[in-house]
Length: 397
Ligand SMILES: *Cc1c(COP(=O)(O)O)cnc(C)c1O
Image (tube, rainbow, N blue to C red; front, side, top):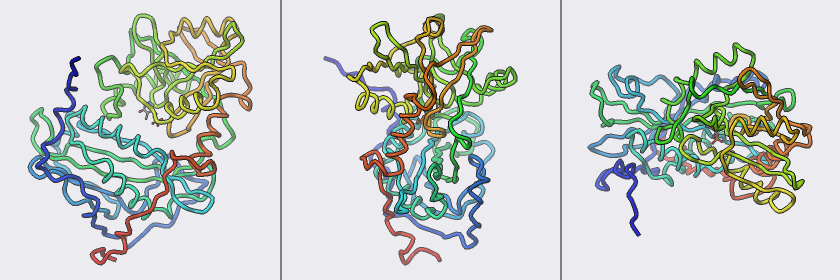
């Protein structure tokens, strides 16, 4: 048996360099903390908290001292790799307040592992996951007044890693910055759960991801090239693009959401289908939650759960035969979004015979949210207990 080493492993730094060390955290408090925004007026990513977490990295030293500092602009050389060659990756995750007012993170280790994988894909440095979780917990504890104590609300966390060294040469970054900003966010569905519409983009015209590409990583370079297609479908009256791949028009995902399909089978049971992680799909945390919950609560009770390819042709034929019960998307922003219809080659495929109330999408959202807010106590939800650096003598108050 031969085990092939992943080429990405070569990006791992030699062990003589300084590792990310949470015990070295220095805190500089914001002396002018902002007034909390009215929760009714929150817009995604528009309101930020008082502080940001940041850690510098250099090829010669490794990870420098982590810092929590007042939120503010960064100063970066215009020739830096992040601006010229998109040396950037990021994460999207949320902190929630439970009924006792305690902040919680949801499966943070999955986001952190994914950030490390994204970093390795674009030649950025990787870091110790446990140390980063300790720092993130400290940051969330410090910003916890910004997590609204309202069910459905949360604090969106945006970790970002960028290549910062000056010089226009096209080569792996020699310095980098890992930072985290936070933004309170409201309930995605203000007026109850609303189905969205998609338009499937012809894969001979628009492609989001391809085997061997970077579409299965959360790197900034994946997003800008998709915006014209998004604008194009919005102009035609749909909410988002459904990205297809290859000559068989395989369904992949919807840009910021993974896709699930519920099919009634001739045997009377139901099949929950999502495309497999073949390199064209972002491995979503919520995708994984839905698969695990389906295997835990549905499989065996008239349900089969499958990660398999599904083409637009099959999807349309299933709908025409009256066997397409539901389509929904999953992602951190909305958790679960029911999809009402998909436009494809000038035709409109109606996605669903189930009512929204009785849908699997609604059940999944309730099950996931119950764990996020600690109502269904589960290992996915991690209580944030800060390391108390904010009170240490070196903290500037
Ligand atoms: C972030 C993202 C998702 C959703 O992932 P979650 O971890 O569930 O938030 C889906 N597709 C793409 C392209 C994404 O960037």
